[in-house]
Amino acid sequence: MPAPEIALGGMTPREFYAFELKRYREAMVPKMTQEQLGAVVFCSGAYIGQLETMARVPQLALSKLIDKALNTGGALERLHYLLGFTTFPDYFENAADHESRATSISEYAGTLVPGPLQTSAYAEAVFRDAGTLHTDEKIITLVAARMERSKRITAPEGPELWFILDEAVLRRVIGGGEVMADQLRHLAGLAIRRRITLQVVPFDSGNHSLLSGLLSLMTFDDAPPLVYSESAFAGQLLDDPAMVGRCHLAYDWARAAALSSQASLAFVESVAEEYERGGN
Image (spheres, rainbow, N blue to C red):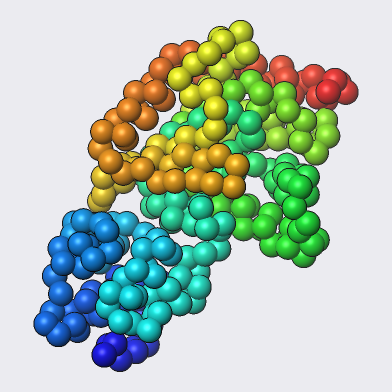
């Protein structure tokens, strides 16, 4: 039988999920170990332990499997919705939680300004022109969520931030020239205030190790590093040490192909001036 429900009390959402997972597992007769549960739901016992100690955020698909294994009646799946784990698209929700706890984030973007660095006008244009039929109310909600994420990530007490942008990010006109000028000035301001390290890979660099997609490398004080990669309507978290190591090496090669921080800042400011003069 499932364990009885309890009140959230003073626990955070992630603490509550971790507590409930461990409680349901230990309520099994006979009690199920982390290794035994992991074998049933196709992950390691160590990963179950990381969920129970909040070193990893729960994944919706895995929670569904755990619900079946522990006969919870869907309790863990419901917690995703009740506790706000699904504020972001399904493919990004896990990465968003890790991002909020990271001590450093190193990201490459090849097409759009990364979410945490977007202005509200740029973000609104992204959502309006994405080919989806969002209502005005939905767009307002999405932009507000993105601005809250940006405020948290770029705050002075936030993680160490390093961003490499392909020149295409600066040249692709999102929302018009005025929006682009303000967006690039925002990027420059973050770099000038030394809140981010910013590099640009110019077109004339040719091919490089991260030419397509988005790649985000995250490190933590209390957990192993992670990598998040994203393409259109899909994303994945990578925690295999060998793969994480390969991604870090690829990021280092991209850094080598990019302009220096000083030259990148000058480049961003020069493109902003082009937009301000009316050049699209």
